[in-house]
Image (tube, rainbow, N blue to C red):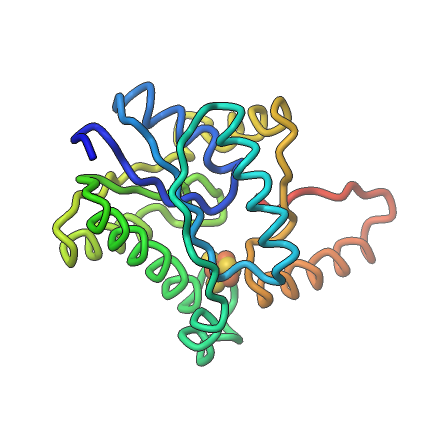
Length: 202
Ligand code: SF4
């Protein structure tokens, strides 16, 4: 792998759009995308997001590295934290799991760099994610690119690109617990507001 290539952990295609643009245009990286997301539940939802990931790869000519889907392992490592609210300890473990596997794959394939699209979400704390990225980077001797892709209207731009490309946009973060939490929030919102629109999660 040449030293201008980066392995980018992609949590979903919409989040990858702007992130890939930044890494290509500002950093001049050759970006390879890695869809490692055992947190996504159920499998039908995983496949929908994966299809969208492939659609983006094709539309923007972004190479991909195949990743396994191992939800059983994810359920085991988050079991004790299933009642945590979104943004709590369960999410910390979830971020760490995805970043650990991305750093390990980067090392295995000879990439010098890796990063993640997770920081583009307004629901996620870039400082926490980047701290984990730097920690796992040390374990494998690779460099983590600590970006905050939501800056400079990054999230807004990702919505625009996604609309242009017709990418699927989910309405919950990914795991079964976030699905239930989002459904409950929508029920409360719908009960209070008679005239509402179905909005996406990110
Ligand atoms: S809410 Fe999102 S980040 Fe948190 S554990 Fe679930 S899938 Fe992972």
